[in-house]
Structures are given as C-alpha cells and as structure tokens.
Image 1 (cartoon, rainbow, N blue to C red):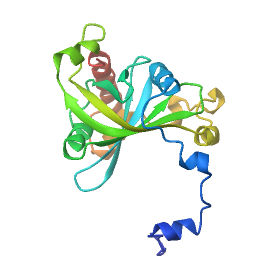
Image 2 (spheres, one colour; image 1 turned 135 degrees about the horizontal axis):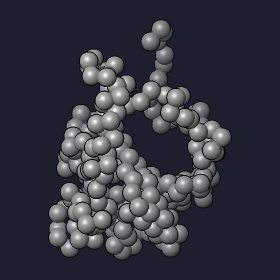
Image 3 (cartoon, rainbow, N blue to C red; image 1 turned 60 degrees about the horizontal axis):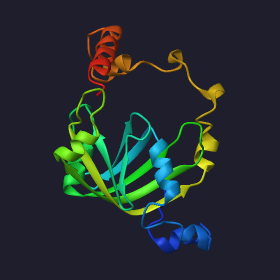
Image 4 (cartoon, one colour; image 1 turned 30 degrees about the horizontal axis):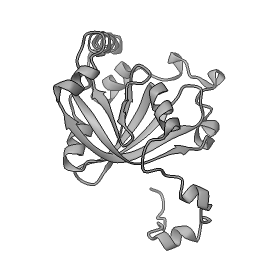
Length: 208
C-alpha cells in the first residue's frame, strides 16, 4: 500500500463510528426455521457457504442447482448435496476442522436474502444420499447443518449492485474467458480457446 492506515481494533471503536442497531434488528435472528425461511430455501437455486480455513482465513464457496436443492429436514436441520467440483475440498476440509458454517441464500429477481448460521457435519449415510440423486447421479457426500440462527437480510446490497437488472449484465466480450485467465495466470502455452473448450466439456460431463 502507498501509505499506512490506522485500523479499528475494538468493538468500542466501531461503536464510535456506527449507531446502535434498532431493537428489532438486533433481535431478528431466529433459533429455528419458520414458514418463511422454509419457503425461501425451497425456492432457492443458489447459495454461498462461509467457512474458516486452517490458518484462520475466511473462505466462501458458491453452490447452485435446481430450486430447492437444500432440503429442510426439520425446524433445526437442513441438508444439501456436495456435487462434483474441483476436488480441492476446501469447504469440506474446513468443516472437518471447524464445523461452524454461514450460508447466504438467493432468489433470482428478489432483492432480499436469507442468512443462516449453524454447525455442519458431512455424511455419506445412504438414506440421505438417496434424497439427492439427480438425473440418476448421486452426490459425493451430504452436508447436514444444525441451524443456530436464521434471519432475512435486507435488500440494500442487491439494490446497490443492481444484480438482477438485465440492463446491467455484462457480455462475454466485457471480461476475459476462464481459459484466457488460466493461460495468463499459469503461463500456459495452450491456446485459451482450447482451455475453454476443455472446461466446457468438463462442465457438461461432470455437472452432477
């Protein structure tokens, strides 16, 4: 960085900058799923998972699929499949070492989001695995989350970003392809078009 800065290192210092939250906001987290959070989860095709890495680094992973890919097991438990990825297993390894998990659910076209915090475990229990067979393909494992907190998140972030506004969407020419990025970052000699083709074929063959 060009110059040093002074970080805020205490809650008291933060509260000198930010007002105290309203009581309704402070106490909005529910200890279990209600009918609205269950409905939101049943419609959501996309969510992000936050975990903590071995060296204390935060990590966020996106997950997506058919609407309702996360199943509500009861008022305090949900489950979702771990489908094919890059096999780094960042999220799963993190959960083995530190099972705390944060989840942020999205609905296309809806500006509000659903936040859920809990304790996760990983299983290959056959009964749970069978719940998530999709197009004849089984998941690699199932993550079960014991819900500790769940609440709606306001629309400000998505309104500011205009994420769902089609007039704001980028086209492929506005950003380099993943093949071009990989070629540059890893100093590959393979043409970007061939890398993109291989990635597209892998995504098609190993989507589930």
